[in-house]
Structures are given as C-alpha cells and as structure tokens.
Length: 506
Length: 103
Image (cartoon, rainbow over all chains, first blue to last red; front, side, top):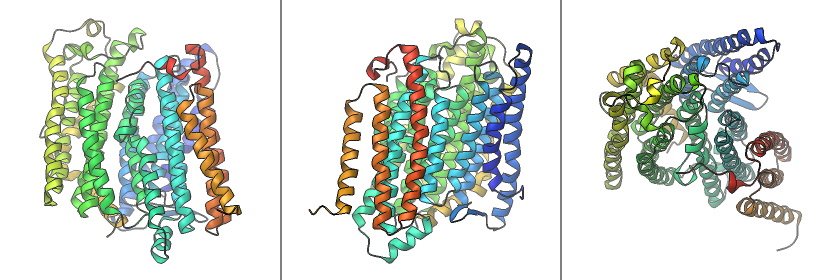
C-alpha cells in the first residue's frame, strides 16, 4: 500500500467516485441541501488534488528511469511516455473542470452524480492510457464511454441533451462492437492478448496478413467513432454542444484524445503496416481539417462552432501522427503529442470561458438557453477577464503566434517538411492554409466581443464568482507561457514520442 | 463447405452480425435500437468463444466473453434509461421524430 505508486492515480478517483455520490445522498432535509452541495464539491476537489501526489512521484520515478508496473495475475498496467502525457492532460483539465463546476453546477438536480461520473471518467482515462493488454484496453475504454454517455445526457430535462446522448450512445456502442471484433480476430491469430506477447506470436509464426489488416481496419473504424474521424463524427457536435460546459471541455480536451491513444495502442500490436497507417492518418487528417473548418464557418451557436473546430484540431493531430508513421520521424509524433496537450489547454479554456458566459448570462437568470454567436456582442464590457480568456483561447486555436497553438502546429509543420516528400509537403501547406482559414471564424468572435455594443443578454448578465474566473486565469496563463516557452513540455512530449516510435518500431 | 463445429459457429457469427447491422439500418424505435445493439454484442461474444477455440486458449476466450456480457449490459441499461427519458420528454420513441439537432 505505497501511496506514491502510480496505481493510485487511477484508484483514488475511482474510489472517490462512489464516496462522492453517497455523500451527496445524505439527508433530504431542506437545510442540509445547501451544505451537502459544498460537501460534494469539496470531496471531489480533494480527490482530484490527492491524485496529483502519485502523479508527481510517478513522473519523478519515470524521469530517473525507474520501472512503473502493476499487475493482477497476468494483467499488466505499465506507465510509459504516452501514459504520462495522458495522465498529465486528464489531471490538469480535470482539476480545472471540477473547480469551475463548483458554482456552475450548483443546485442542479443530481449534482452528486455529475461529480461521481466525472471522477470515474478521470480515473478510467488514466487507466486506459496504462493498459498493456488488448482486452483490458477495451474494458477501460468502455468504462470511460459509459460515464461520458451519462454526462452528455446530464440535463435530462432538456430534449436536445437526451437526443445528443442517445446518438452518442448508439454510435459509440457500434464502434465498440467493431473494436471487439478486431480483438477477437487478433486473439484467433495470436492466441494471446498481451501486447508484447502478440508482437512475438505474430512475428514467430505464419499468420494471415489479411486477417491482421482486417483487425487494424476494425480498430481504426471502431475507435474512429470516438476520435471523430470525419465520416464517423456526427455525434460530436451534438454531444459537445448539449453537455454541461465543463463536460464539453473534458470531451473535447481529453476524451476524444483518449480514444486516439487507445487506437494507437491497438494498432501497435499489428507490426509492419506503419506506411499504410501513415497514409491513412494523413488523408483522414486532411479531410478532418477541411471539413471541420468549413462547417465551423457557418455555425451560429458558439459551442457548436467550437465542436467543429475540435474536428479540425483532431485533423492536425492525425496529420502529425501520420507523418511520424510514414517517415518514422520522432519530431512528427512529438509535435502531435504537443498539440494534444496544447489543444487540451486551448479548447478547455474556450469551453470553460463560454461556460462562464453561459453561467453569467443564462444560468444565473434561470435559463438553459444555448449561447448564440450574436449574444457575445460587447461581452468585454461586462466580463473583461472572460472575454480576454476566450479571445486568447480562440486566437491560439487559430494558430496566431506567439500563442501555444502556433507552437504545436509549427512543430508538426516542420516535421512534415523534413520528410522531403512532395505529397507530404503539399499536405503541410494545405494545413497551414487551413489554419489561416480557421481565423475566419475565430476572429469575428473577438471582434464581436470587443467592438460591438452589448447585447441584451450581456446587459442582463450577473457577476461571476472567483471559482469560475480562477481556472480561466490559470489556463490563460498556461496558453501564453507555453507559447513563449514551448520547450517547457518537452519532459513529457519527448518520452511520449519515443514510446510511439518504439511501439511502431521499424 | 462441410458443416463442422467451426463452420457452424462462423455462420452463426456472420449471420448475427448481418442481422444486427441490417437492424440498425431499418430500426426507428429506440428500444429496438438497444435490442439490435445487443444482437451485435451476442455476435461478438460468440466470436470470442470461437477465437478462443481456434487459438487453443479456450479459457481466455470464455472469460472475455463473460466480461463482454457484463460490460454491454451496462451499456444496454444506460441506453434503455435514456429511452425512458426520451419517451417522457418527447412522448414518442421514434428516432426520426426526436431528431432536431442538425448541421
């Protein structure tokens, strides 16, 4: 029972989840209700802060070359660069979201369920990143998916949320069936599901290459639903726009990325297809970028616009990974992982800032309306800090130097040029042009907030509490600092990229 | 093709998958959608028992099958719970009728 072991970053949130739920069900007397809400919030925040302790110690062990493993019988959990990256992302955004949700979710029916599911999702995502067995990976993945269905449909009084939740559930469930078929195919051919074991078994014996390719295709499609690769993306805009704002931030910032990590882990057991995956990832990446941008251009709802921008950012990440697959260049993978991290910060900040505006303008006035783009007009006059945070977030998403988004896109860009292949170069130029195109829908938002006269909703808005502005402030600082000093994240992106190259070693 | 055990199971998997995917395309009732998803999961369960058998690792295949049943029951429960809420708010279970989010 060493509390500093990495396994505690998975178990603390998972144990805290039922505790938080039960503490929220204590007593039904009117007087208790108010205090109970504080108890639930406090416990959730305490749990996530506690989970930082094993994380910090795991990082220290990892950087000094120590081994981080845990097993129950033959099921292993191992920490490598990618797990650490995911854990860092999940914990940073999770802490911010729990802090932010305090006032945002206060007084909602079933507040305790919200925190319980959120904590469970956090623990399951870190577990997913550490799984070292194909079936185990699926179990974590499915657990994360179930908790996210419930969170998307959290406002069950709202028809639109229910619709989004149902769409999300059906599409994800079909995706996970496809993943399972892929796992069954691998099991039939390799006789084991341990990742390194499969590698050995496949390289030792004569296996049917087509069966492996089929399994790979099933993994790409199955996990692709969660990653929102373009023809499989239809759940994403609905789910992201209808969930509570904190959950939109989690979904866009870490859940779809966790799906991507799961896809990479699953593909890594099938050796010898790196070039094919590279071409596939790069083409889907380009498609995602273009499609996300074009649809974001014509959105009138702010959260929906941000959801489509998530599609295009997944495209950048796929492009970076594709370059790494194709050429074996560590820089491409490092750029992609850095973009994973910065996208988490930027999109998390954007969704939380929108959430803050929704809180001030609608929730405080007992309305659950969606924030329209036109409602943003003149928001800077009443909410200067939120407007600044939102502007910084969207400008960073658009890739304006010297903010964080520019730095990570630039790393992918450079890695692409170093491949010295005309097609890849063309794709990189396409990506840069699209990055400029995306400013066409980000810049008007900033313009609207600062230069227009306030809308009715802004005038009727209420002031914001500290717990909402503090996470915005912290994340805004992080986006700016990472823009000036991008090498700050090298300690985790470089090992993650090395892990990636080792997984798909050629 | 001779009707050996292996072939019968293979036919079972493929036909369950066929029924499932066809059902997904034509079903409009949300409860039936959840049922169709369960048919797909049953195909997967069979596939795991099958792949356990052909790879000579029957125990692993069966234990995975049991885990899949448990995990997907949870998904079915959540799906049905959502369907109940949909019926309460919309007064219908017809998928196209509740579809309002577009673009």
